[in-house]
Length: 508
Picture 1: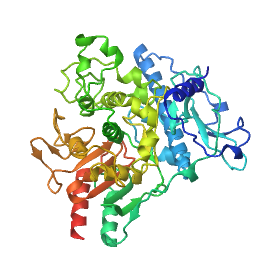
Picture 2: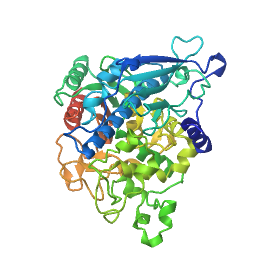
Picture 3: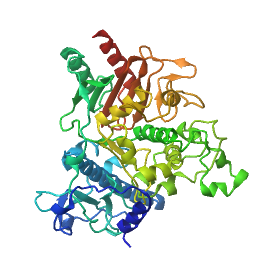
Picture 4: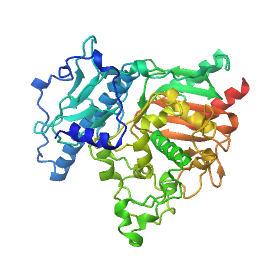
């Protein structure tokens, strides 16, 4: 059974498998694919050997090989996800654009490896279409191992196969691109809310590096009430261009918990209590971990690195169950803050049954996020700590949902008071910063007070790597979205941008 066949069985048994491409009758030649080669010609390419040289220890050689495999997985995922999600929404991203933005300024040591790895983009051949949808990206990394592959998923986006997994054949193509089936985003645009000079000044500052030398803004969006009052994009990006949310996905994960809580499926005080934890009873302290502990990064569990990069899951092809659930407890739950992807992934286990029944896309659609794709790993587990692709306007919908305390188009999506809950920096807090942490969202205040002049106490925000931000300011009825592809070592100052936006809107 192929990897894809195993995945299909898993998804068919639990996840809502969506008909990703539209009407099947128009398609032909399913087994024919178009191969697009880039980088050095693969036929002539000899992958650099990782055999230890005299100056290398055995461990150094092993690490070098591992990093090369991870870099190949990173490249395969970024190319596959950026291309397929854009095309699904009716747009396109070129490999050159992805190399310029998503594949530059990434973490070391992968940054020095990733762009030179040769790759192959495989597309379906579809009658009546100049080029069919992407179904897989393959990246060569070692001459004695199969290429790293990222494959288009039936539920949207892509998943990366485990290192060394055999190459898959094209998954069955059941329908054409669903781009024409995506609902209108429904946003009102108020062109006159801000003067042209104010909008130009804010946009210029956001895009020209005023808030961080070397930062690369791709989108800036300001929402006042129900309308967009400012919107600007870097060349090559636009309202329908999805980008990876990185850790903004943690705020989406917290929102999924809220949706399930409103449905009566879970309470944040519930123990997560995985089945194999229960077998240990009172001897397994992990049974004391609640949903609230996981949302607040306070499970007390060990994680291997600060920030918990989860590279085996993101780029190595391991599963959520393998990488996120088995860490031992070092502190009593609820006593120590430790920012970790593992905790967000653990929180999703509490609502797994709910999300399996309704599907992530179905839940997102309930509050207008129709241009957002929550990716899974190869076995079907949602990677809701980082691996979500969304447009700036869709992230604005998430902010607006919280601005309106969980109401969307007259329907209560989140429990009453949920906005206060997620923005309350209670419990243990991060050290060494003047920012606080609520339940899946960051805050500009800590329990001892607010250190940010010009930003109201009730402001809170979602934050993701490479400069992804959603700022919600209920007292001002404002949401601010900033998207970026910031290079490693650069940072966009979202507090200063928020302060300046609030001041500019107040003056108009």
